Image (cartoon, rainbow, N blue to C red; front, side, top):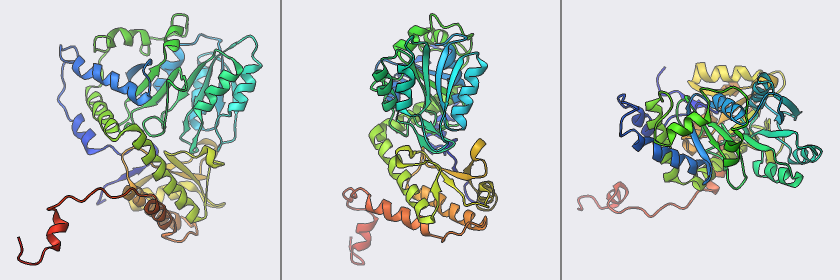
Length: 410
């Protein structure tokens, strides 16, 4: 099929050309004397993305799921009590992992469309007089439902209860796109993957651990080998890894971090919020609703859009892919067939997202959803035009100036 296939799933995301070029490298000796010149600055700059001065960053060959496992096995022991909130497919899967490891998990089910409740965190921890809970686990951005939890409010709730539990946060589809303040919110373990806001292929599990989390490792008795923080720290201290790293991915990560820092994290977060709000205006223009049950839950990286009764969201996705050559995200588990998802994170701007919105309109109409073509696109355009930044001064001597000169002038 002619033309480029665009991803509007919430990961993997489109990989910028700069990152692709950075990954196109020959293999090299990962034990060479020069390899730390790549690794040590990268680990230091990765901490800037987590917004931490005290945390230790880890780069595992793996995925966000591997990051989940590393967080659990380096801090907990069989039978430890854990408080975990379930409000989507990925919080559900993380809880499933905890239970497989033999942890004693108190599962708090929330409506799919809401996030973790700080009030419930406070009340449950306040009732735990003996401080049996060793960790509180929340998903920052639940990819399946387009819901963001206020991690800062969760930390305040834990403080209000005076509880010493660790705070473990999955920010797989949040970090590098949505504001995440590891030190300010005193997050003990933050987990993400390379294929979302970092604009890379899947293949790296990125984790950052607080000093308190690292200290817990001495007493943690869950088995660990590949995911051992201790092994990583010993090797990373001199710029190496305890096993063979993915060399092209490291170069890609280096370039992705460069892109994020060049734009500046506040600008990255503002861009994602503005693009997401344009998408939400489009959903309103179509007369449809989001899975997220209120503005306090709206995600700036993915919008989960409910389809009308009698329509299968999978049909919208199938038509988008087979007829219009672009990818939308599917509904998962409880919301399978009830929605489709538009991912709006990573390497994109207004024009890119307009293509996704326009394609979604065509796919929805073809699937039998009665919307007016152009209604969502126009709503997004209006919002983005109303909120656009002033143009920078125009450089002289460019094509526009040349076109304005009288014919024959020099």
